[in-house]
Amino acid sequence: MFLYNVSVIAEETIHQEVVSWIQDNIVQSQKFQVHFLEMLQSPHEGMTYCIQVIFPTEDHIADFQQVHLIPLQQLISDVYKDKVFLFDSTMKYLKK
Image 1 (cartoon, rainbow, N blue to C red):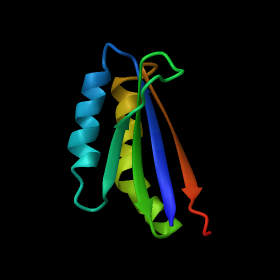
Image 2 (cartoon, rainbow, N blue to C red; image 1 turned 90 degrees about the horizontal axis):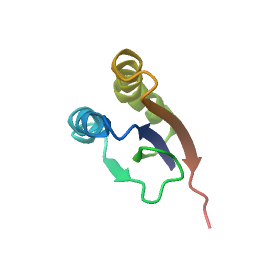
Image 3 (cartoon, rainbow, N blue to C red; image 1 turned 120 degrees about the vertical axis):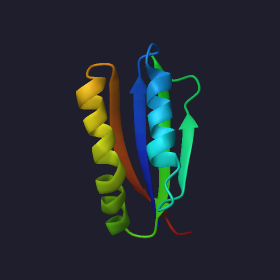
Image 4 (cartoon, helix red, strand yellow; image 1 turned 30 degrees about the horizontal axis):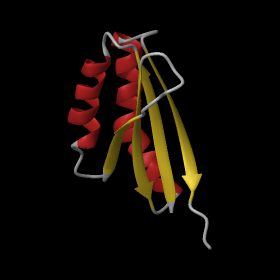
């Protein structure tokens, strides 16, 4: 099992627009079960959000990236350049 995390850091002046887009285009997806969180006490300026999805294999992550991450990156590049930053990470659950 894998946890895929996308952290999104947005300037306070536009963060609600970004949150709305994420809710409409990623959280409401019927294809993946998405957890959308706001980071409290973030060390970054602005607002930090995390999009987290659990996948059985890494191949499923690639599908999620194609369907959701690439459009989000395009939106940031086209509309919110230098106002929104994101980074992603993949973590593997360890068996006990």
